[in-house]
Amino acid sequence: MPNADHTGHRDRMREKLAGKGRRRGTPTDTDLLETALYLVNRRRDVKPQAELLLSRFGDAAGILDAEYEEICSVPGIGESTAYLMELLGEISRRAEDQYDQRARLLWPEDIHRYLIPRLEGMEQPPLYFLCFDQDMRVLDCTLIGSPLTNPEGAFEQISSKAIRLDSKRVITARGVLEGPVFPDEREMPWVSAITRALREIDILHLDHILFSKEKFYSLARMGHVRLTDEERGLYRPRGAAMMTSRLEYDTSPIFPDPVEDKT
Image (cartoon, rainbow, N blue to C red; front, side):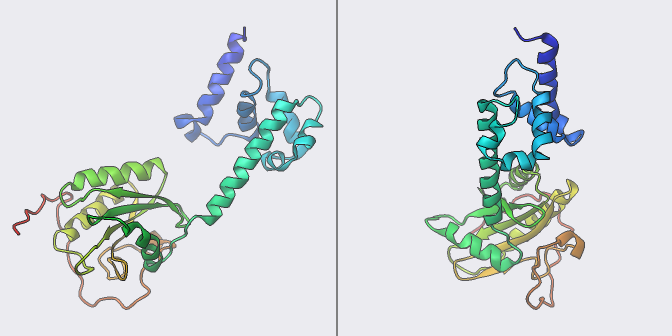
């Protein structure tokens, strides 16, 4: 049976690397390796193995780049450990390649091109929100219901996904299947509401875009989403002339009552 103190140590290590524990400090390479080695060493103290691998290959990147045979040649390191390190290395390389290929959207035109294929097969005008990392790479693009009838629900969906992905920048976009590519009078209040509500939890609503297959309309480009240059960061909506008139909607309530459709 495993020693109780040893089992407790492993539990503490897992807690350190997960959830709230991870936020209390950055785990060391030794911490990460030791926890990974639990998978192939159920009862053995694996910290010496982790330190041995780091001594031989320099750092975590060096271990993950090493060949299977190189790892096996290290005294005290078995085949299971070598296989695990090789597997983690391959996963890391693929993740890095996929990250490099992930869309980086810096202009409203980029957003438009990214979203056009998502209109295919739609019978109702779709509403999307996109979460971005600090380099304006897309972390997620989610289809949600109309905030015109449920603004609180839209805010909850956007904020919960952004928080889960640790995203500080979001853009919303409504597809237009027919008619003018232009915001209607009901749309402006909830754009303002969501922008301000997200700002309260330190998330920037960079833009709201209306788009069809041929055209798009960027509220940020037209001056209706107001951000400082520092807040905007890499996103550059102002590539075209600004409209001279600007709609004033910032005094609307955070979540206004839905406007009844009398048509």
